[in-house]
Length: 359
Image 1 (cartoon, one colour):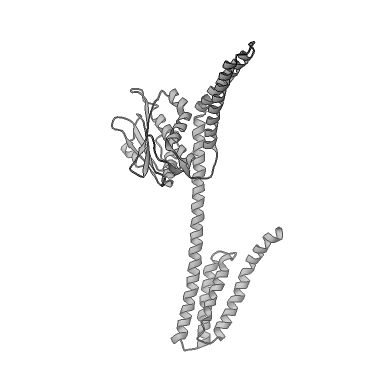
Image 2: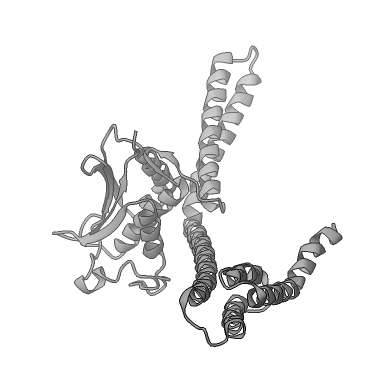
């Protein structure tokens, strides 16, 4: 295995010597060959060998050397007869060398841009994952309460079943109903754990058909305790029969979760009116869906509207200014848009549109 891995490296180190020998051979052949043979075009093979040279700018340097050798060979072999077809062959050879160098450089630049794009996408995914984990950390108390309820119900129903089993004869009807309640509570706790695991895990970007209304309802289950603790009433206006969208379920759930958390925090200092959160979903034309999160909080200043979605811009003293920027990046990656506006009376509305799945 070690020898197999070292052979390509050894070959790569030998490439400059091979290229030099080949360049010398082409130079001699070009100088001695008849005038009507454009031997210098073979320098393109020398340029191709320079792709994996162990030093920077090897391609450019090799191209310059090959061009100089072509001109030198032309001057040595043809004396003072610099015109006619011979000059045309020389110029064609120079053009071939230049074209080869440019083609290789363009391909290298394209590969570099592709690698940078992949690195940027990975960095965005890592940042989005970190933001999700931070949000779940902020909701840890509410999530703990949500888990505590079904676990407490399981314990209670287990005691009930044990008590009915101790009766002689056992009350099978009550025991059966208790077992069914335990099964229901286990299923509820499992759902909560699965949602948390999906949101917290670092998964690969994966697009699939998604129903937007169930996604909204599942996310709100994680926030139910937080809404109750903040004294916020929830109004759901979800249009039935919406078509599916195609996207990464976890990323879209993160967008909605972030928008609702922002709405909750925006109403934290509201005491002169009821705290109400309205979630709306509907069709937007024939080929898009819209999801809107409307609060009655402090609203948005006109000066802030254009800055809201910029990275590191925040109106919160403890905020990082990354949530909305990440949300907009996710929505735009799904072919949609994310916007915000102030309400006429009070508060603000954040809404995002997504293209529906094409049948």
